[in-house]
Image (cartoon, protein in one colour):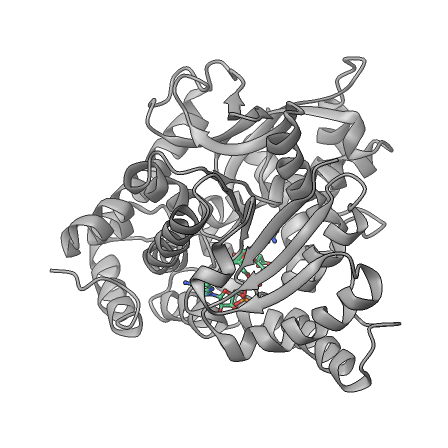
Length: 441
Ligand code: NAD
Ligand code: LMR
């Protein structure tokens, strides 16, 4: 079998060790000849790089491993770039969450003003790594799961239309794992129909390979419990704040009982509730810094100190195996069916062609082929149209350096109550993001 060379961009990410361990676990399906980490923060990345170097020497010495902050070293001779960058890191995620709360608005990583602010930062970083990939390995593909995925995908559609960038999200994967547990199946046994924007969509069908439909059974469970399941099925979304989120799906279903909701819809349908229960001194960014970030970096330091990764605290991010499925789909033309963020072009019949939507696709050597989801009902369509316009305005504001358009984007967000609040918020966001955003006028 062919062996591949992969660079992980955002090598200093809290997800890097879990994803590397997952890739080592899948070497029989996706063999590696080279694995590199690339980051623009050498100090942060070197902790994980040094630890992973020890781990790879022990567990997969045949894979050539390196880590670098030099774009040429990072991006030359690669087949795939797996991208999970966070422009501004946790310091800025904290601002995305805390600044809106000061204005009475929910603060969230990808939804509402937080997502808009993060989007304005991410575009620059994403374009930078896409350009490096195209300069040094023009035939490579980027598998991107950096957030906010909708805004990043729209920016790629406009600014890098011919680039080989595939945008994918782990949230539907995580929720499908929960659904599979509810009906006592495995995710691999199930096939779904789904439509929406990223972090803003609905499942319309969950069937097994024989064609038996389970949506009623899942719906009955979710109406009582949300997606909260007894056993922890997902290594990522298990913190206390996530348990709340899985539970809240019950109230999302109550508004719209026809389809199974993506959990992120809670920020749009219940922003007042989310605001009231927010803890401004300790938001999700703080929870991650005190939890996942601390755990991953302490484990790395322990490996370096001991000089061995035997019994290390690095855990396999099993749920991230969808990334290997995606790489395999491209490399071996498997026609794997996956939810991807792609240009609509009729997949949702009554939605704009140029919208970046999330729908099931068959993925092969030429990339994703979206599967038609037909017409969607008015309620979902109207919500999606509003959110789509927000995302398009953000990208236009970035390109045109337009204060007016970003003000409109914030005003239109379902999470923001008025143009006045939007303007006050924007002025604060400009101030805290001045090292990252283009200068707006
Ligand atoms: P993190 O802050 O721990 O890591 C991000 C890394 O990206 C940092 O080391 C930072 O220095 C680096 N970076 C920032 N800008 C860069 C640039 N221009 N070039 C190269 N590197 C750059 O963040 P995290 O919590 O691990 O998340 C990483 C990303 O993955 C985020 O965008 C997050 O939203 C997304 N994400 C991925 C998954 C998944 O399934 N793996 C799940 C949720 C979120
Ligand atoms: C993360 O940092 O895990 C996020 O990207 C999603 C979350 O858990 O808030």
